[in-house]
Image (cartoon, rainbow, N blue to C red):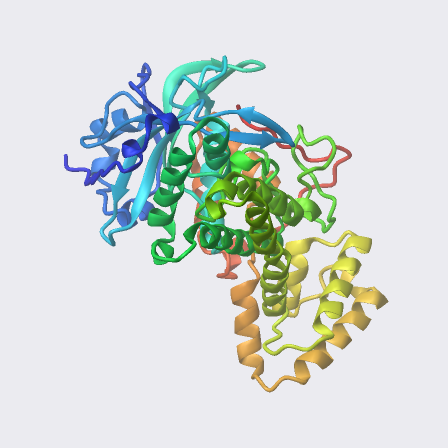
Length: 483
């Protein structure tokens, strides 16, 4: 059957410093677990053909798609502040598919077996973490947050050993590219300056072609990546998303969210929230994400210094000036988004104070982040005693007075708030529940969860149960890397 692949493998034309060509690692008995038919359509692929035995063999890494050029990418990265040589230790890039809109996207198999960068690992992945990435990445896409996408998950018919035996699985991931900050760190450390230039020119041509003819395109490149990341991190903060492992190898040049290992969404508002079991010091806590993004961008700037200017002192000065824009860009994006969440369609200097007061109230009273904005959107406060507190009543009165000072209609305000405040997020307990049942072969809860998460701003009755909080627990929720 004609699946519709249109591979054109530009990354494979880069110097071999940046990758290792790969033979595929076949598995025993692959079976399709889930297929993203909507994404398949967007990619110009046949959803029917993608459910065929031929496609399942391709998803499993048993057969090379026609026109593909499998490889494992080399990169480095600061992992919790410590620099390491890394690379695709359990992923194989099949190549780049050209969509009907002439967009170029990477098609990658995650969990596809050992590569030269596996560092002693088996290169495999378990079903739970692969389905988790599928759920969260597609939820992020529906929320309007730039992200890699998930096309399919297959089981391998093989067990993988972690603390105990788990079902093996492979995720087919789609991305604008898998170029990372760590890719440039790798080039700067182990490549030649000419190879670094080749990589930068490739990234510019692929993601920022409008600056190819700029006088100093490399400082412009840095500025564009800074801008993309300022927008992305603000979007994370606005929905309470905590990535969990913001290492430099997990920051893309394209501005897409990548690698959904120990990520989760915040329930009660607490800026110090950490979910990752390995983030014992809170390096990547919710409140630290903007600063960590800037730290990562500084590592990118360091890697680009030889290209920015031949005089190192001048290069550092130019890079520092570019980096100084990040906090301003981030705050502008954050407060613009917060104003929309509160229906503020004009700007007043007191708005920041109004926003900060609400967030501080949430923190003190352990109010749920998403549901607080949901209640404000719906104007429904009677079902939660926390909204009867005098401190909230006073804040709400101040907010109402602020709304009355703008000339836009109440209808427009309400529509804006509905478009800015999700009715639901992937609640951690709902995700875990769906994953547990999926591992037992019951996919219905997973499919239902995906259905409601696909329209987070719909405010349907069907979504009500997914907005409820988990039962009180003495144990803090923890996430794991899924390796």
